[in-house]
Length: 236
Image (cartoon, rainbow, N blue to C red; front, side, top):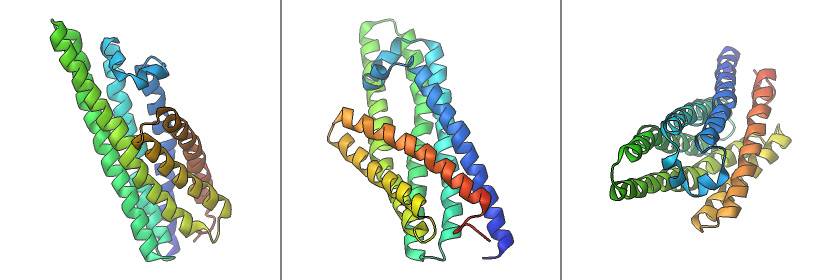
Protein backbone atom coordinates (compact mmCIF):
# COMPACT_ATOMS: atom_id res chain seq x y z
CA UNK A 1 0.00 0.00 0.00
CA UNK A 2 1.40 3.42 -0.96
CA UNK A 3 2.66 5.52 1.93
CA UNK A 4 0.38 8.46 1.07
CA UNK A 5 -2.66 6.16 1.20
CA UNK A 6 -1.60 4.78 4.58
CA UNK A 7 -1.07 8.32 5.79
CA UNK A 8 -4.61 9.25 4.75
CA UNK A 9 -5.98 6.15 6.44
CA UNK A 10 -4.15 7.02 9.64
CA UNK A 11 -5.65 10.52 9.54
CA UNK A 12 -9.16 9.11 9.13
CA UNK A 13 -8.54 6.58 11.90
CA UNK A 14 -7.29 9.27 14.27
CA UNK A 15 -10.37 11.38 13.54
CA UNK A 16 -12.67 8.41 14.24
CA UNK A 17 -10.89 7.71 17.53
CA UNK A 18 -11.15 11.34 18.61
CA UNK A 19 -14.90 11.25 17.90
CA UNK A 20 -15.25 8.06 19.95
CA UNK A 21 -13.26 9.45 22.85
CA UNK A 22 -15.16 12.74 22.97
CA UNK A 23 -18.69 12.06 21.75
CA UNK A 24 -18.85 8.49 23.05
CA UNK A 25 -17.80 9.41 26.56
CA UNK A 26 -20.13 12.43 26.60
CA UNK A 27 -23.00 10.11 25.66
CA UNK A 28 -22.26 8.01 28.77
CA UNK A 29 -22.51 11.09 30.99
CA UNK A 30 -25.77 12.18 29.34
CA UNK A 31 -27.23 8.68 29.81
CA UNK A 32 -26.38 8.84 33.51
CA UNK A 33 -27.95 12.30 33.70
CA UNK A 34 -31.13 11.00 32.05
CA UNK A 35 -31.29 8.26 34.71
CA UNK A 36 -30.67 10.82 37.47
CA UNK A 37 -27.20 9.31 38.09
CA UNK A 38 -28.84 6.35 39.80
CA UNK A 39 -27.64 2.85 38.93
CA UNK A 40 -30.83 1.28 40.31
CA UNK A 41 -32.81 3.07 37.58
CA UNK A 42 -30.82 1.16 34.94
CA UNK A 43 -31.92 -2.08 36.60
CA UNK A 44 -35.53 -0.84 36.78
CA UNK A 45 -35.83 1.48 33.75
CA UNK A 46 -39.56 2.18 34.21
CA UNK A 47 -38.58 4.56 37.03
CA UNK A 48 -37.47 6.92 34.28
CA UNK A 49 -41.11 7.34 33.23
CA UNK A 50 -41.79 9.68 36.11
CA UNK A 51 -38.71 11.82 35.57
CA UNK A 52 -40.38 14.36 33.28
CA UNK A 53 -39.69 15.97 29.91
CA UNK A 54 -36.09 16.87 30.77
CA UNK A 55 -35.23 13.20 31.15
CA UNK A 56 -36.93 12.46 27.82
CA UNK A 57 -34.72 14.95 25.98
CA UNK A 58 -31.61 13.80 27.80
CA UNK A 59 -32.42 10.24 26.74
CA UNK A 60 -32.89 11.36 23.14
CA UNK A 61 -29.54 13.14 22.94
CA UNK A 62 -27.72 10.42 24.84
CA UNK A 63 -28.87 7.88 22.24
CA UNK A 64 -27.94 10.19 19.35
CA UNK A 65 -24.47 10.80 20.79
CA UNK A 66 -24.12 7.06 21.38
CA UNK A 67 -24.98 6.42 17.74
CA UNK A 68 -22.27 8.83 16.60
CA UNK A 69 -19.55 8.11 19.14
CA UNK A 70 -19.75 4.34 19.46
CA UNK A 71 -21.28 3.09 16.22
CA UNK A 72 -20.67 5.44 13.30
CA UNK A 73 -17.13 6.21 14.45
CA UNK A 74 -16.45 2.50 15.06
CA UNK A 75 -17.61 1.67 11.52
CA UNK A 76 -15.08 4.15 10.14
CA UNK A 77 -12.33 2.77 12.38
CA UNK A 78 -13.19 -0.80 11.38
CA UNK A 79 -12.74 0.14 7.73
CA UNK A 80 -9.41 1.88 8.39
CA UNK A 81 -8.00 -1.06 10.36
CA UNK A 82 -9.25 -3.49 7.73
CA UNK A 83 -7.47 -1.60 4.96
CA UNK A 84 -4.23 -1.35 6.92
CA UNK A 85 -4.13 -4.88 8.35
CA UNK A 86 -5.61 -6.94 5.51
CA UNK A 87 -2.26 -7.60 3.78
CA UNK A 88 -1.23 -9.63 6.84
CA UNK A 89 -4.09 -12.13 6.66
CA UNK A 90 -7.03 -11.41 4.36
CA UNK A 91 -9.35 -14.01 5.90
CA UNK A 92 -8.85 -12.85 9.49
CA UNK A 93 -9.11 -9.20 8.46
CA UNK A 94 -12.31 -9.79 6.50
CA UNK A 95 -13.97 -11.70 9.33
CA UNK A 96 -12.87 -9.07 11.84
CA UNK A 97 -14.24 -6.31 9.61
CA UNK A 98 -17.53 -8.20 9.35
CA UNK A 99 -17.76 -8.28 13.14
CA UNK A 100 -16.99 -4.56 13.41
CA UNK A 101 -19.52 -3.51 10.78
CA UNK A 102 -22.18 -5.84 12.24
CA UNK A 103 -21.56 -4.27 15.65
CA UNK A 104 -21.99 -0.78 14.18
CA UNK A 105 -25.13 -1.61 12.20
CA UNK A 106 -26.92 -3.50 14.98
CA UNK A 107 -25.96 -1.14 17.78
CA UNK A 108 -26.47 1.99 15.69
CA UNK A 109 -29.93 0.88 14.63
CA UNK A 110 -30.85 0.20 18.27
CA UNK A 111 -29.56 3.64 19.29
CA UNK A 112 -31.66 5.29 16.58
CA UNK A 113 -34.77 3.42 17.75
CA UNK A 114 -34.12 4.43 21.35
CA UNK A 115 -33.59 8.08 20.33
CA UNK A 116 -36.97 8.22 18.57
CA UNK A 117 -39.21 5.87 20.54
CA UNK A 118 -37.88 6.28 24.10
CA UNK A 119 -38.66 10.01 24.49
CA UNK A 120 -42.03 9.53 22.77
CA UNK A 121 -43.04 6.96 25.40
CA UNK A 122 -41.87 9.23 28.22
CA UNK A 123 -43.96 12.12 26.88
CA UNK A 124 -46.96 9.83 26.33
CA UNK A 125 -46.69 8.54 29.89
CA UNK A 126 -46.66 12.10 31.26
CA UNK A 127 -49.73 12.99 29.16
CA UNK A 128 -51.71 9.83 29.98
CA UNK A 129 -54.86 10.49 31.99
CA UNK A 130 -55.55 7.02 33.35
CA UNK A 131 -53.58 4.49 35.35
CA UNK A 132 -54.29 1.79 32.77
CA UNK A 133 -52.77 3.90 29.98
CA UNK A 134 -49.70 4.60 32.08
CA UNK A 135 -49.35 0.90 32.88
CA UNK A 136 -49.54 0.00 29.19
CA UNK A 137 -46.89 2.59 28.33
CA UNK A 138 -44.68 1.27 31.14
CA UNK A 139 -44.84 -2.21 29.61
CA UNK A 140 -43.91 -0.80 26.19
CA UNK A 141 -40.98 1.12 27.66
CA UNK A 142 -39.72 -1.96 29.48
CA UNK A 143 -39.87 -3.98 26.25
CA UNK A 144 -38.01 -1.21 24.40
CA UNK A 145 -35.33 -1.08 27.07
CA UNK A 146 -34.87 -4.87 27.13
CA UNK A 147 -34.71 -4.99 23.33
CA UNK A 148 -32.20 -2.18 22.92
CA UNK A 149 -30.13 -2.47 26.07
CA UNK A 150 -30.11 -6.15 26.95
CA UNK A 151 -30.82 -7.97 23.68
CA UNK A 152 -28.82 -5.85 21.21
CA UNK A 153 -26.26 -3.72 23.04
CA UNK A 154 -25.34 -6.26 25.73
CA UNK A 155 -25.82 -9.56 23.86
CA UNK A 156 -25.69 -9.36 20.06
CA UNK A 157 -23.28 -6.44 19.99
CA UNK A 158 -21.15 -8.04 22.69
CA UNK A 159 -20.54 -10.99 20.37
CA UNK A 160 -19.96 -8.85 17.26
CA UNK A 161 -17.50 -6.46 18.89
CA UNK A 162 -15.63 -9.38 20.52
CA UNK A 163 -15.18 -10.93 17.07
CA UNK A 164 -13.85 -7.61 15.78
CA UNK A 165 -11.40 -7.29 18.67
CA UNK A 166 -10.26 -10.89 18.34
CA UNK A 167 -9.39 -10.38 14.68
CA UNK A 168 -7.50 -7.18 15.40
CA UNK A 169 -5.59 -8.88 18.21
CA UNK A 170 -4.44 -11.66 15.89
CA UNK A 171 -3.33 -9.16 13.24
CA UNK A 172 -1.29 -6.86 15.50
CA UNK A 173 0.43 -9.50 17.64
CA UNK A 174 3.59 -9.53 15.52
CA UNK A 175 4.41 -5.87 16.23
CA UNK A 176 2.37 -4.81 19.26
CA UNK A 177 2.33 -7.45 22.00
CA UNK A 178 0.91 -5.08 24.60
CA UNK A 179 -1.92 -3.98 22.29
CA UNK A 180 -2.50 -7.64 21.44
CA UNK A 181 -2.95 -8.49 25.12
CA UNK A 182 -5.32 -5.57 25.72
CA UNK A 183 -7.39 -6.28 22.62
CA UNK A 184 -7.58 -10.00 23.38
CA UNK A 185 -8.66 -9.22 26.95
CA UNK A 186 -11.40 -6.97 25.61
CA UNK A 187 -12.64 -9.76 23.33
CA UNK A 188 -12.73 -12.28 26.19
CA UNK A 189 -14.47 -9.93 28.64
CA UNK A 190 -16.95 -8.93 25.92
CA UNK A 191 -17.97 -12.55 25.38
CA UNK A 192 -18.14 -13.21 29.12
CA UNK A 193 -20.39 -10.18 29.58
CA UNK A 194 -22.70 -11.39 26.81
CA UNK A 195 -22.92 -14.85 28.39
CA UNK A 196 -23.63 -13.42 31.84
CA UNK A 197 -26.35 -11.23 30.32
CA UNK A 198 -27.87 -14.25 28.58
CA UNK A 199 -27.90 -16.16 31.86
CA UNK A 200 -29.57 -13.25 33.64
CA UNK A 201 -26.68 -12.74 36.07
CA UNK A 202 -27.11 -9.00 36.40
CA UNK A 203 -24.33 -8.22 38.87
CA UNK A 204 -21.71 -10.17 36.94
CA UNK A 205 -22.89 -8.63 33.68
CA UNK A 206 -22.65 -5.11 35.09
CA UNK A 207 -19.13 -5.74 36.43
CA UNK A 208 -18.03 -7.12 33.06
CA UNK A 209 -19.52 -4.09 31.30
CA UNK A 210 -17.67 -1.74 33.64
CA UNK A 211 -14.39 -3.52 32.89
CA UNK A 212 -15.09 -3.38 29.15
CA UNK A 213 -15.73 0.37 29.14
CA UNK A 214 -12.56 1.08 31.12
CA UNK A 215 -10.41 -1.14 28.89
CA UNK A 216 -12.17 0.14 25.76
CA UNK A 217 -11.24 3.73 26.64
CA UNK A 218 -7.63 2.66 27.21
CA UNK A 219 -7.72 0.81 23.86
CA UNK A 220 -8.93 3.92 22.04
CA UNK A 221 -6.14 6.00 23.56
CA UNK A 222 -3.47 3.37 22.89
CA UNK A 223 -4.55 2.95 19.28
CA UNK A 224 -4.70 6.72 18.85
CA UNK A 225 -1.07 7.04 20.00
CA UNK A 226 0.09 4.25 17.67
CA UNK A 227 -1.68 5.77 14.67
CA UNK A 228 -0.38 9.24 15.52
CA UNK A 229 3.18 7.96 15.72
CA UNK A 230 2.82 5.75 12.68
CA UNK A 231 4.07 2.77 14.67
CA UNK A 232 4.05 -0.72 13.11
CA UNK A 233 1.78 -2.15 11.79
CA UNK A 234 0.43 1.32 10.96
CA UNK A 235 3.68 2.77 9.61
CA UNK A 236 4.25 3.85 6.04
